[in-house]
Each structure stands twice: as structure tokens, then as C-alpha cells.
Length: 238
Image (cartoon, rainbow, N blue to C red; front, side):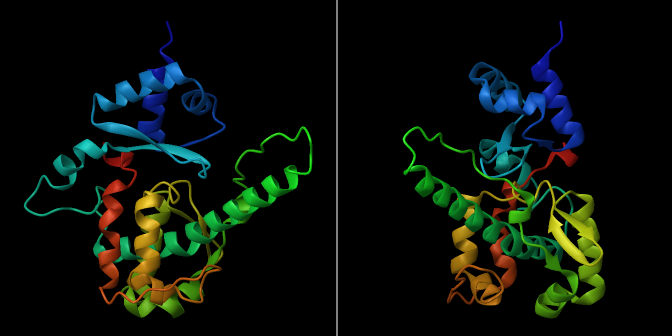
């Protein structure tokens, strides 16, 4: 008998992410019994399903209850299981802030606009959250280097780290432009991380670079904004 739950777990571990409209992914998101069994299987090996209603993909991550065992298992607390250096982590945070934060704002605004429009219709149905790729802004590599290059190790180092992040599925590089990759919207817990970025040191650095009002008076170093990377998708190292 075909074990669909095992098949989905195997695919998530090997492929690292799946689109929400994948047959098994949809079943995990819509079938309560199937989801309970999936959660039980993943919990048995210290993992949990990573999904967000605003993200077009799903993945797996270290379960919150096992974070200390994984990230704090050595002499010092590690920030990730992908062997990314501090400057690569900082670059990932910057790209998340430049792409995901404005994308989320656009998603919320579109959802609100559709809700307001439906109020005038007697039998209007609730529309699903928009995950249109065009809602994600594209960042020019030249602009990124001009604004953050000196803070992220210089042109050579930034270029090297962009290659790493692209290979891990966080971003997509196309002809000098950086677009959202499958894992970028899953790498951080939005609710835990967004406000820290908006109110922290990156608030000043990002001011005027995104559609949102990014303000903050915190004088902490840029790298301190990466503490929540322990919530990242880690299937490549499982």
C-alpha cells in the first residue's frame, strides 16, 4: 500500500521545498487527518512542517522544541545548519527585508482591497491570499552593492554569498537582478522577525529603500538582527 505521508516527508527532505499547489502539499494543508499524521511523523524525528499562508511553498524545519539540541549542541550557539558565515547571514536578512517585507505589505493591501470590494456584493466569496510572483520586488545587484556592499564584506564577498544563497534556494539571480527564491519567505518566522528588523538597526539602513516606513533607533550591530535564523529551513542538512 502506498504511504502518502512517507512519500511527502521523503520529498520534502530530498527536494527541500514543494509548491503549495503540489498534490501532496495541498493534502497536507487541507486534509486535517493527513496533516495530523504528517505532523506526528515529522515530530518523531525532531522536525516540523514550515508553511505560511502567504508563502507559495512549504518546507520542513527543526522543531521549536529541538532547536537548542541542534543549534546549541556545540560550545557556542550556531545561527544556521548550512554553514553560512556571519556576512552571508546578514546578507540573507537584508534580502529578506528588501523582498519579503514589501511583498507581505502588498499581499495584505490586496487582500484588504478585495475584501472591501466584496462587501458591495451580496453573495461574494472570500478570495484566497494572493501569491502572485509579481508582488515580490526585484533587487538590482548593483543597487544592493551600492547600499550595503561596504557593510557586507565588499563586492567579491557579496557576490560569493549571493551564489551560496541562490544555491540554497533563498534567491534567484537573473541578469544582475535578485528575485525571491522558494525558501526566502520560509527562512524566518515572520511574526517573530519582522518587527525586530523594522525596529532594530536595519530599520535605519533600509529607510527609504522599501515601500514601508522602516524606522528604528536601535544602535545594535547589523549582525545582531540574525538571531532568529535558527528558525530557518534546514532540510539540506538533515
